Image (cartoon, rainbow, N blue to C red; front, side):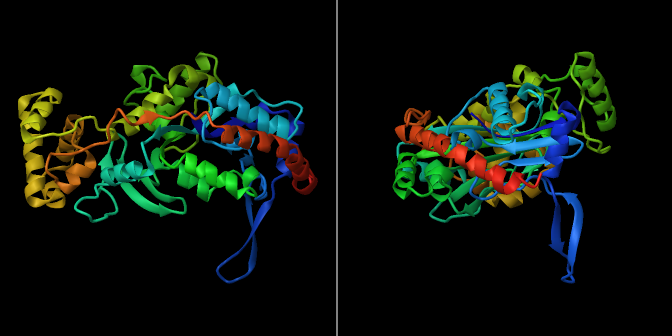
Length: 423
């Protein structure tokens, strides 16, 4: 499903009176500086939504930028649409039509994507099975809990994998803090317990039932940002192949001309060192397969081989390597890890050699966690027969949606009376 969306569009796409009204909703932030004096910052904070209303972010300047999740219109984000066009239109229409009550606004398909979260849920047999699987991914071996594997890298940048204690329980981050894309894995039941839908906050028994129902569900989220889409536009099939290798500024200018030629109003940031080319929803929905990006982020974590020996590893490496010599070097590197430890073995090879070895070992079935631990090549993975993609048909979720719809009219009226009246 498509979860959180950050959409942006030039303010010229809105009627002038609508932009003027939206700007009046914004105010300057008052803060104290290091001396304790009150200082009025000259930056707009955007629209502030009170805590009793399902939150969304809206900022207005030369562009109008909206960020929200399906929670805003359905009361929860457990499940939703897989269609980017449908998600964007529903979000935009709800915020600007139902909540802000504007007379007109640009269609959701015309907005430019600044961030999109792609989410899938997997049902493990039990919560204990999910917990053990997360331990396996994090490389917890021999009864000792560790922070996580040291690092994993891709063609863009080095992206650390870490385990952070969150209010909702353990959460695995792949590339936390990255400006490109971030992966996140956690237990949806724990998350619902810690962050229940606002419309059922006063019904603890419903929250407990939801948390229990989703206790064995693992949530896998990929947050991909406009910078990653822009940097990989050729790879993703969004721009012609001859754009590859162009300098950032030249790339942005040529991309703008190309988009203009095919009837799309170009939009890119003015950062000369790393400009971001934005693509509209209707263009991405045709050319970008979000499910494939999610698959590339998480599929390697679902092991299907019950056991591996040195012989089967070498055979697998030979199948994936361009030649037998490369396979043997990767195999020797893994043996060095088992003898000297991960850190020392990594120091003995160049950075490019390490990533080449790592890529081959991953393809052959050696996970990052196994690589850091240097464990024996015998593993017992989650049984792929028991782990299933989870699409809920829950009466409790329908109850949440109905409760949200019933309360929302009063909440919106209160929002207009308490927050919007000044504008």
